[in-house]
Length: 465
Image (tube, rainbow, N blue to C red; front, side):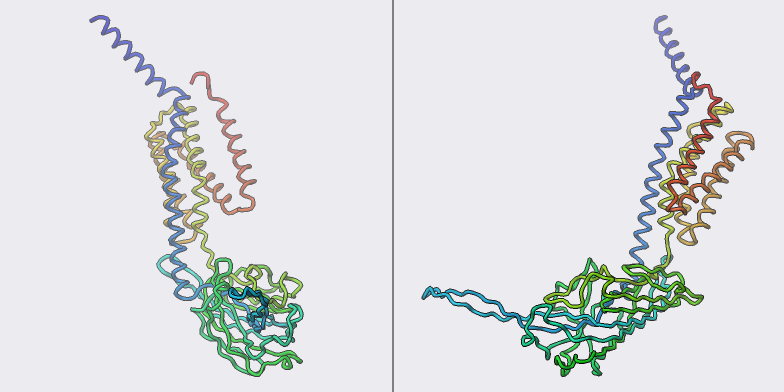
């Protein structure tokens, strides 16, 4: 009986000693803080998934609006399409007599000739379309293509002029957007032609995942080789509804383009950029291009097939700059850093001031820090990112500061914590804005934080922990 009582007393003393070690040991406290920081990665993971889900939802809604109005416009043409005969020799063996003879087979191929001069004039009037909290830019555009063709040179394809079928020549235009077309009128050699969709050549229907549709005229009237003794002029009027961006491919031997719009937030992209410096005005923009055949790596004529030319397009992007989700995602990636540094701050205060902080209180502070990101995402959907960041940051800092007052029983440390969190969130915001210099600014900031922690922690007696 006495031995059993002694054993219980020893067990109680060991338990009390272990409990005392957990409460007073710096090592145990540091391990607890590290463990809670890792635990809080779980809600951070779900928050990042939430941001990605909202971003995908935005893309889905914008795509639905664009599909109904009219998608982006990629346009090039007109292209002179002239068929010609190709003869191939085939050896045929008679099974009955076992005699062989040569058979000539006639096929039809097409030659494609690009304009000598091409002038593109486009007026684009965008507007915002909204569905709920999501927005996209749609537009009505009026496009005019003027220019001329020189005499098609079939000698480059080693084609006998007698095999050219001039009476079956056509003009064709390629575009990525048929749904939004409201006007398509083409005049060639003083004759007006209607355009019709042609889906006969399936190989040409898709360019680098973007569906391209072919519009063709009927056979050109009274077209012979003699018509091209002088340059033959054309004019193409094309009005189309589109969204987000408009692009052209410079197929002229010399291509001049002029795009004007009342949209002030446009950006120019593609293989070629405008040459005029004063393209932006108080009313929008007026951009000009001048592109020679020497500036791009494809020729003015192609025999047998029409190559993929999409990569040589140039144009204007009218997308509404919605980067709230991108910035929120980048901000959430720093969540582990924010939680870790905040816990480190409380750990140093607890160790230096000898004020006890329960693990549950650490957990509450960590959850408040994760709430910042849900507030940021939800508010930024209805406002701009800066305003959402200020509201979310102010709310979380105020909450943690007041909660710290109830824990630390004095205003000195909570005020310091509030100022430190303000500096930390400001630092994170600066990093998010400085995409090109984020690494160097972040590295310098973390170096300064490390130096401050080393300076403050020098007074801690780690040997007694």
